[in-house]
Length: 523
Image 1: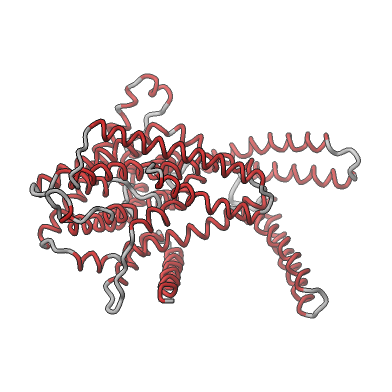
Image 2: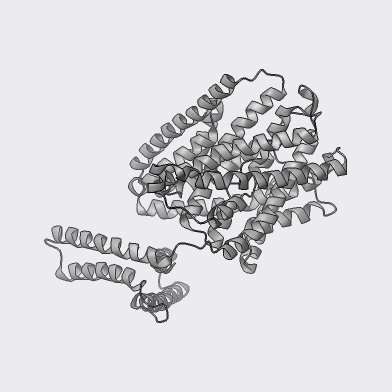
């Protein structure tokens, strides 16, 4: 019972924190992190311990899976080069730089242990970076690069961490050992993810019940992770591959009802998981400080040095990765040269998150490894890097983007593209209507023609002036008022006993669906 109460309290605090963030216009992860930090120092607050498996198997898979579902595969493929440079190259570079810097300050600590710390703090978080990027309105390609990086960098960091931890425990680790492990881990994750995605797609095609579709979708990331972990493959790669495959094919796999319902279910789950996970990070403060045995001066010095190194390494990697590759004629002809403000913003968007904490908690105790190392210091440093990157970089990233002029892609360009495609879609719909209109009442056919024309006109109207109300906007406003009146009449009839509850539920569902369509069109 006590565990249930604690869970309910955590979820309630996370919901209240997210509501407060929205009310104040702040970013929810930052508010919840600060709330967790504040709660952790309150007297009487119990210590909170996060098990690494809870994060790596219970929380991270659905977050990565939904992020992959929502990622555009064509955009991901077009940005694959910068994504891999960040998700693989930058993670390895950061881990090695941090490792050598920490080893220079703490020469008594084995180099493999220092590189393990580097692997822990190297990958930016899959949630915070993209949440902040979308919230402040960065260009779509920048968001795609940050999303792709956060989807894949965890796999690189965790493989590197396993290799470093193996060296810590005295295992012989050579070049071919590392290469073989990377190939088997990443390749196994790729194969498992594809197999799981094909299996899930097969089930979705044969399911007509929206609830069963939701159940299959909810189970998919956890099944993928369990199978990958048992096979000692990369569970992160497996989940991301499955999510990308299924997300690209969802329009052909699920019915409209299933898609709408599954989107609502996943939005709720991700909202709660994101809230709880950042709250848990903040609540770790008391336990980590209590376990710390290293001196205060050493702790502060190493923490500041690692933070500076992590930030500097990302900048040092970002500019050459952006511009040197464009010296190759084929790449230069295919990709425009971005202004320096773009790599600057991407370099500053390196917030760390809960994966860093889970990874450092999975390190073996220092007394059990060859040479020993200050595990308590490494755990505290990783925690501090999460807090510092979220609070320092997360709060200043909107200002940096605004000052450097890195803005969201023009909405006018999106509206023009939408209107052009909507016109082609309307023509296809009208041709299909003519092919199947034989025997249908003329009034029905005419009504459907009018509906198709209205959809096409609505897309073109969004290109017009924003200072006056367009016909589509007027239609939405007036139709919502009509729906309110209809809903009120049905409620009165139910209250007076003229209709049963089932009739009200059915009518209300139809009205709610129509009103949600109006709202979605306006959004």
